[in-house]
Image 1 (cartoon, rainbow, N blue to C red):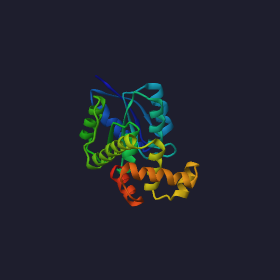
Image 2: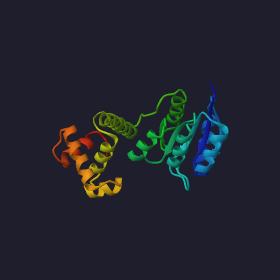
Image 3: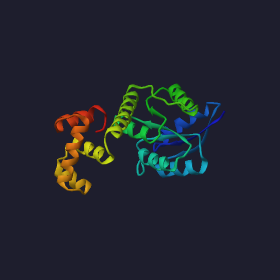
Image 4: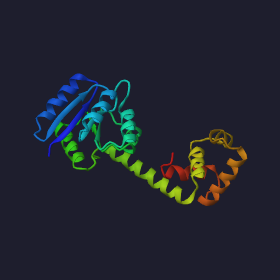
Amino acid sequence: MTMRVVLADDHPLFLDGLEQLLRLEPDVEVVARCIDGEEALKAVRELAPDILLLDLRMPGKDGLAVLRELASERTPTRIVLLTAALHEDDVVAALQLGVKGVVLKEMAPRLLIQCLRKVHAGRRWVETGSISRALDRLLQREAGSREAAGLLTQRETEIVRLVASGLQNKEIGQRLAITQGTVKVHVHSIYLKLKVSNRVGLMRWAEERGLV
């Protein structure tokens, strides 16, 4: 089955090389090439490709901004992120937004092709150490959120995150538009439910579950 691909990268020379590489593959059809985020969004909306190969760093609307828009539209296009360097926070954000693969620009061409074929087949590309660590963090965060949801109310979970971020009761009250006294009551309830005795214990509980 032919794989229809849209390419998005702001470096013309790299884009040329990428297109030439993919055109050598009998099962790949490059249906559009884009040099910024707006063009990438337009191409996906108009052409509905199987895969968008998207550069993370582009002027104007970058890769993450494009991902947020496409995630809100629930596009069936599978997205592979292209980047010169991996930062775990970016990878976690991208995975949360539905990215199915992350490719380093320095990766061997055959690995790029393998990645695209895996993603096209409905699988995820998580071969490199950085991506695996980011995926582990994402899974830890999701598991931590589920555990918190089983023990705490939504407001209490919000307060746990804010306490773990280092905010004091007064700051939390201002952030949530509630009184400092109400925050104190919530914090006491959280201590009892999680069986911790102070803010340090609460922060450790949240960190262990990836909630911060």
